[in-house]
Amino acid sequence: MRVAGWILAAAIACWAASAAAQQLEAVQIEEAIASYRAALDTSERDSRLEGFRKAERLFARTAESGASNPELYTNLGNAALQAEHLGTAVLAYRRALALDPDHPRAVQNLEYVRTLLPEWVPKPETGGLLDSFFFWHKTLAGSDRALGAAIAFAIGALLLAAAIRFGQSALRTAAILPALVWAALIVSVAVDVGGTRLDDAVVIADETVARAADSALAPSTLPAPLPGGVEVRILERRSPWIRIRLANGRDAWVAESALMTVAESDSPTADRPRSG
Image 1: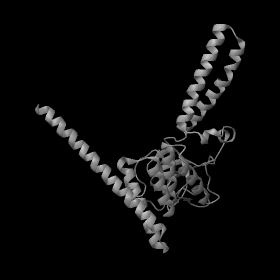
Image 2: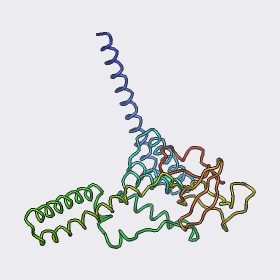
Image 3: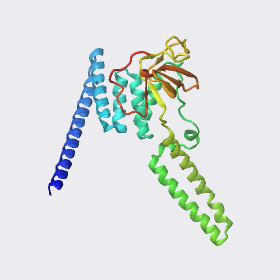
Image 4: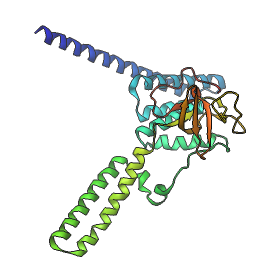
């Protein structure tokens, strides 16, 4: 009985802690939304920026506490965008899409932020084979495509089994269409799953010098520092340096503190680096 009492007390304590954390998260989100809305109604530039930056900090703190979801990251990205922190905005939208590749606001806003970067900055290609030939890749949710793949596979298997059972070549031919649909849907779902890699990263520092080697004395490989918001892929780590690959395939070395990986769950707003 005493052990059971301890277990019950521990369960109550865990429930109370969870409830308190959820209540704190709700308060932070409400405060962030209020700050964001107040900033929208403010015409004075400095006050407006401070309001958006406060909302950004509150959204980031909530995400850092473990309450991350696509909507929260999208709100964080919106606040960071209005606060003129493009690096944080891109990172937040990428994290939202890592959780839900079809989130409409995150997709739209990420594409918009990319247009704000200098023209010389290499950017990931938008669209491609799937978007051109398989328009439903973006119009159907991932769960719907997975269900459709399962149904197409079942239909194709039934037709093939019937063709074997009754010796009908017409049924075997008819099984080709659902097989093709199944393959296309599987490829579409696989692209979503593999769309965010563990080595995908975003430059969050305002200015980051891309160097030819892992040394502060190495020459710059680009005509200007990389601005915040540039999306890269990490190739190698030699702390405090990281070798990256830009969207155009060019490699460079940057300071480790200038990047954050999309897969990380910590907040980029604390101790924001300014240059690298």
